[in-house]
Length: 392
Ligand SMILES: *Cc1c(COP(=O)(O)O)cnc(C)c1O
View 1: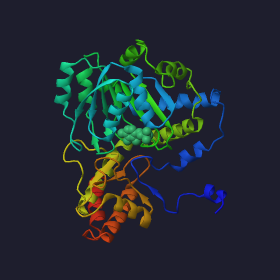
View 2: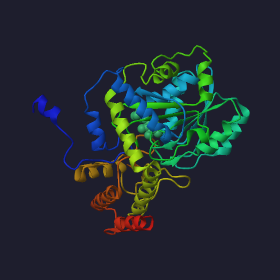
View 3: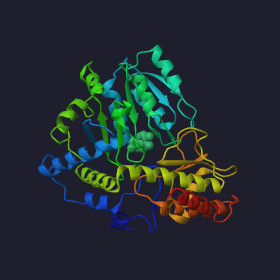
View 4: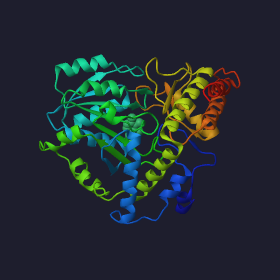
């Protein structure tokens, strides 16, 4: 095979990207990203950055300036920390899954002092435990993952925001896999920094990430205690954002893509988008249950953007994932952490509809049956269809 053959290879026919990120990119967004690349400081790019800013604010529920960076989501997790805390500063990380643990690792690498509130994976965050820690220590920030993609649990940001409102402590939330698919009311809830990325519910390819920063956080960022930060410096990013630019070369094509994706969200209507995510994720859970797949979450507020199933006894998660791809070109996720082999995860975010989750269930039933798991033919589809009818 020549190199050119390899380079022109596209995804196989029928390829279904059903991961909890990256997610399927709608044709409209793909077309927008194929536009001519323009001067990153010229009028076309400035207009696109300005429109993306304007259209993303209601999705965030904020009046804050929004800072865009060429980066994956983790870059902005790091950026959020390094802009407010330096060596010797103390922060509290609420760890309720893999991405909470990542925040702790980032903070340790930055020589930030970290305390953690460890929550059993798949359970709701104990708000009283967080409050107890806040009474003991004046933390620089409480850091939490809004939508834990590893477990399918949502954090109660309103309750956490209420805890820090009268304190100097900031609230930092990673909504990489939430924003655009689950409700975010940053200003009302008192979330000081929200970070997110392009490749999840925002329906773009990986490569663009963002931060929305509150006035309270800007006051902390303004106190320069010699923080070692350059590319991620929010102060420089803000100066550029005020000119509808980015400090360094903007990911021009991604900005066009994000603007198009946001236009799609507003055409459908943000409340309708959020309701679609809620309805379809619960229909998928219902269908999975009818196939004998228990919800990984024992209790607590479920994510509307990721559905996490326990793997039935006697089966291995990676085998289900592999067979779904081999036999159906349906690409889902297992786990790359302590849950490895024990859970399978579907993205329920971005551009998807009832047909998407019914196809998921059809393929899942076939794969489970082939692997020897007893299923009643059509049981998952029936349960999901009934759920859809009841919630139409
Ligand atoms: C996907 C994701 C990230 C970002 O991961 P990257 O691979 O760096 O883009 C961060 N937090 C959560 C909760 C995620 O789901």
